[in-house]
Structure formats: structure tokens, C-alpha cells
Image 1 (cartoon, rainbow, N blue to C red):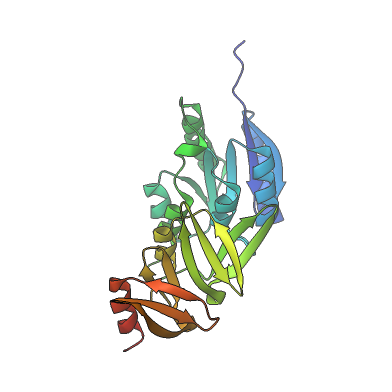
Image 2 (image 1 turned 90 degrees about the horizontal axis):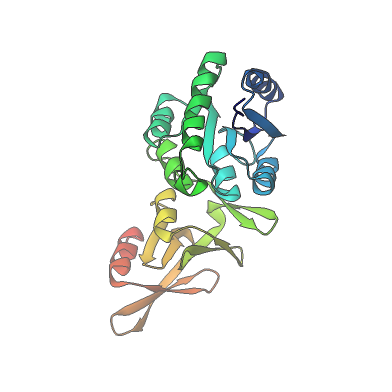
Length: 256
């Protein structure tokens, strides 16, 4: 008798009833082995990191950490089925990035389709977390136009740090990471500075150099540094280099 491939799955949803409904519906899919249920994003990050599931049923809208932030902190999962009440704009974004989703409320038939789609992905030779869509691209596509991040999430060992963007002084590129400077501390986040720039409100944050983004509210003054070069001095006293094009943009942004 041919054995059925089993896929280890985790359910993440802050609503107990939603978890219960999904758990009951999954009884019709013996190939799915449920290894954990999580009631919030922090539990989810821990479970995904430790258990490394094949499949994640992930609620998008949750307090503290949303679904995108969970993936960002926990790392990619081979197959993700988003469970969401998002509008049609966001659903088109999910479809464009080849991500499965269940629109609440859903029934057994819709779940069956999503599970089959996930099985196809998992069953393909070479299907892996590395081939999953980039989380920041998916999150950006799912946001409505002119909607920017209000907080940044950073993994610091076993801890999760939440940084409100209003408290961010500046960001500095460091190879494949960015150093986020806020309230006198620096936090390393694995992200490109160009990717970070797209998530921040351009009316509040400005790319002043290929390696620096600054919070305009923190700018104290601009000073000459050498021949045709400048630095921006922040209220904290920090000095950041300004490129020629950055200097022009900065003068325009500050109205001078």
C-alpha cells in the first residue's frame, strides 16, 4: 500500500473559534499533520523557528504582530496559506505572488482547493522556503497605495523588538542589513536599504545618500564638510554624509 506524504502544518490565528473551525476542517485531510496552534504572532515566530513546518495557515490581521511580520521574523516557509478578511485589492496582490489564501468565512470546498495548491508546491522537486515570495514584496503589494509602515520589527536573538517609525532617527545600509537607529540604540535588520525606503512615507523620510535614510523631523541643520560635500546634523548630534543628489532633495524637502 502506497504511503501518503505527510506535511507538517501550523495554524496561526488570534481567534479561538477560527482555529477550531480550521482544525475541524483539516480532519478531512489526513496528509496534513497539525503540529502546533498559535494564538498570536509571538507564539507563531517561536513555533515556526523551532518546528520548521512545511505549511503555515496564517491569519494576516492580528494584534501585536501581523502575518507579514511573523514571516519576516520567522523566516520563509515552503508553503503559506493566508487566512484573511482582506479586501479585493490585497487578494489580487496575493494571487500575483502565487500565494494561496482563504477569505474568511470559508468552507470545506475552498479549503480543499487551497490545500491541493499547497500540496502541488510542496510536491514539486526543489520546492523550498528559498523559492517562496519575498515577504517585503508581498507585504508592499498587499498595502493600499500611499499606505506606509507605522512600525518596524526586528529579531534580536530570542527577542522581538518593535520600533515605531516616528522614533526612527535614521537607517544605515550595512551589506545585506540595515542598522536602524532609534532612541540612541542601533538594531540590525536583514533588509536592503532600498527595500526599507519603499515602506517609509517619503514625506517623513528621505534618502540622503546611497547608504542613509533620515527622518526629516530629526534634522537640525546641514553643514559643509569639504569641497562640494555636506553632512546633516541631527538633533541627537549624529552626523550623516549627504550625497550631491541627496543634498538637492534635502534642501527641497526642508524648503530651503
